[in-house]
Amino acid sequence: MNDTVLLFHGIARTKKSMAKLAGFLSGHGYRVVNVGYPSTRFSISDLVDIIRPEIDDAVKKADDGRVHFVGYSMGGLVIRAFLRSYRPANLGRVVMVGTPNNGSQIADFLKSWPLYRKVYGPAGQQLITDQTAMTELFGTVDYELGIIAGNRTIDPVSSLIIGLRVPNDGKVSVESTRLDGAAAHIVIPANHTFLPVNKMMWSQALSFLKDGRFTS
Image 1: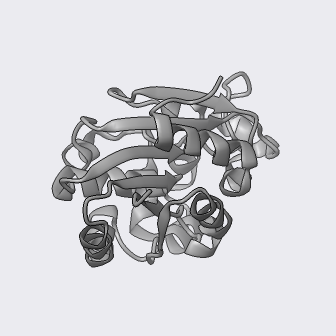
Image 2 (image 1 turned 135 degrees about the horizontal axis):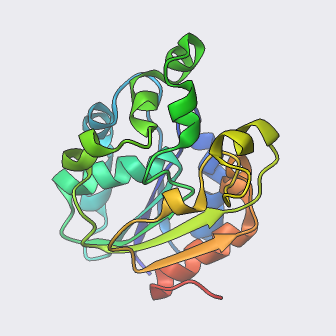
């Protein structure tokens, strides 16, 4: 196999958080590029410009292989913005993991707190549930997309903000991960923080990259 997988971490994380998933996918024959970016210092559109050279390079090196994208949390939004403007001709499949496609109630709650603004920066302000300003940035899904959501929460305060009866992973509701045009959506018993190291997530992501579907 000469397919490439590009990995994108979440906000306030580094590519180290995706290293174990990178090792897993490498072990299954993929060439993996684990993309790092300064997630808390720029807006999503600025981040797209920052990571573009690394992605262009990976696309060139893929030759006749396909290039797949896997994004955790805000990494999925970065992928959406990138593909809206710079979709590679050899695009394969896309997997989003715990991505707040319809925003996060946590971001709504915290957006005006000085500490949140300081820690999460411009992109943190773009994670709110009112996504009307973001329509132009993300475009529509016209690629093969699989979405993995978690439904285990270990944070009672976050769950209270999201809604006690609303299935969520402690940061993002299951409903918020959904996106029109997605080929498949699956919910696994996982917490948002630990999704990148969740082995069930790894095997489901691999299944979608290989076959375009999740295993039940």
